[in-house]
Length: 132
Ligand code: SF4
Ligand code: SF4
Figure 1 (spheres, rainbow, N blue to C red):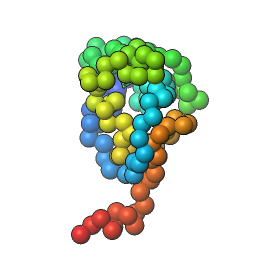
Figure 2: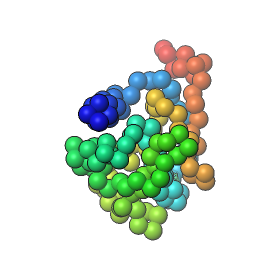
Figure 3: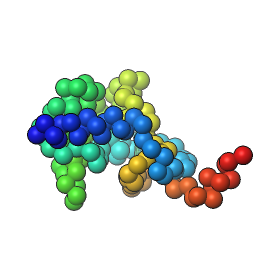
Figure 4: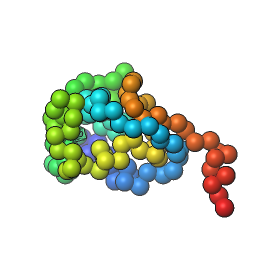
């Protein structure tokens, strides 16, 4: 179990320094459907004990609760601060929420169906065009 805890801390720290494996172009805007806060996916969380441990060291995680697992066994979380599809702590929402949808991700994830944002992978040629 200690190994899992150490692994989760490692992933958490790493998430603050995400390597530029893939960049995305984000267009559109939020239409306030609340879907992204209803089903928050995690590719780094392995067990319930681990989640409890993470809540102790990262208090902002206490707002999340486990809803179920996806087909790969990763947890899907809900948030207790979602009220009528809106964030009830919008001005104080954590970094994770502020940066959504992220423009750089190590692991690909899909936007919820009907989301007002459009997120598309940038091609290698686009990278080259931006190099002066
Ligand atoms: S799913 Fe997209 S449109 Fe809906 S609340 Fe989240 S960011 Fe906004
Ligand atoms: S804190 Fe607000 S923005 Fe973040 S998941 Fe909860 S309801 Fe959504």
